[in-house]
Length: 441
DNA sequence: AGCACA
Image 1: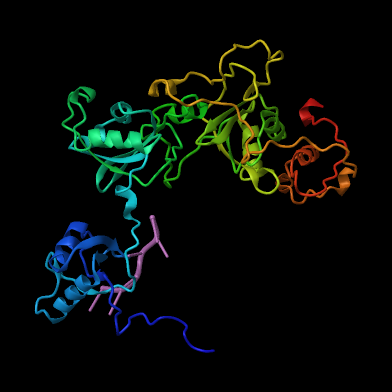
Image 2 (image 1 turned 30 degrees about the vertical axis):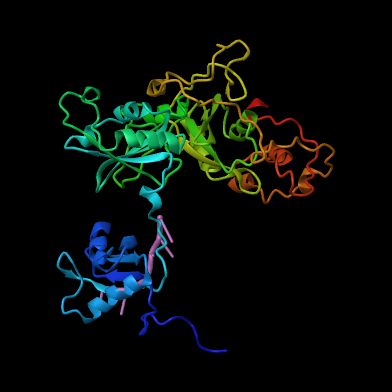
């Protein structure tokens, strides 16, 4: 059959709806103005303003269809058009029967609060002061701060909506206690709504954002080194000074990535001196130290974006750390100093790197830096199958991401192939000799 | 001035 490629853009006959479509509004029209406009005709139960590319459209929804009809009818025969701030507003029935409200952000209680700090000195309020203020009500997981048209704002993440709610109820509309502020600051008022966020993504511990759930993260130091400011180049992109220490984060970690696996992967590009693994933002990251910057550069170029395991699992994202020499306090399954001959006799303390200014950020807290435990979502890598028989030449290495780099020694590929792809059908590497990096042979 | 992309 032919025809019916689409609805005409503008229908001549509007099906009545209790939702009205408004256009030619001020771009910053508020919900209050919409309610004012519709109130004479009935009960406005919902609105959506600042719609469209120009933000000059809106919807209002009446409780009853007849109320919408009366508003349309009134202005259809009125000598005075509907107006907002003197601008003529054009009305028609919406082609939908109800407003689908995505604007649940400020309405629905969640564990993350959107805090607007008001006052002439609002942006001088430090993140530490905010942390102090909100910690009264429970453990603050994360804070991010940013500038918006609304002013200086912060997102404050609690573990649950109840805690967030108690903080909101107590603090909304209140001033930050003056004794918490530097003397020269004027009053700073807190306006608090719920955010739609549930888990903030904090990339760095910095003067703008904090993740208090990971105080032990060595990577936090890289962002905190110096002023905590991020170097920005002329093109506006972040500058990343090259370093002999790489920061690797592992995406899509379907399989446990062990220290040994990382050591093997990164050893292909030079003698890895030290590795420290840690949890960060729900994922796993690692710092890998080479003796010199050149090796790190080559490793980064070769490995960036590649996956440790076939199927897109455990994808590596690599950047340069600001560390130059990791301080490994203990050798365990998360951190290792390969330059020390006898690893057993090290300081029996948790694996931490260098000094730990991040510790100052929080009181004792519920976070436990547990070792990685295989779960249903992160099944442990099955042991390499025994009895694989086919010779190495018959192995299909084409699919292996490392083989694309051209930098990977063949024994790397073989070994990794033994460990990977547990469900990808018969893999038949011959019994491989233990992996030994080139420089050890 | 013409229908919501979060």
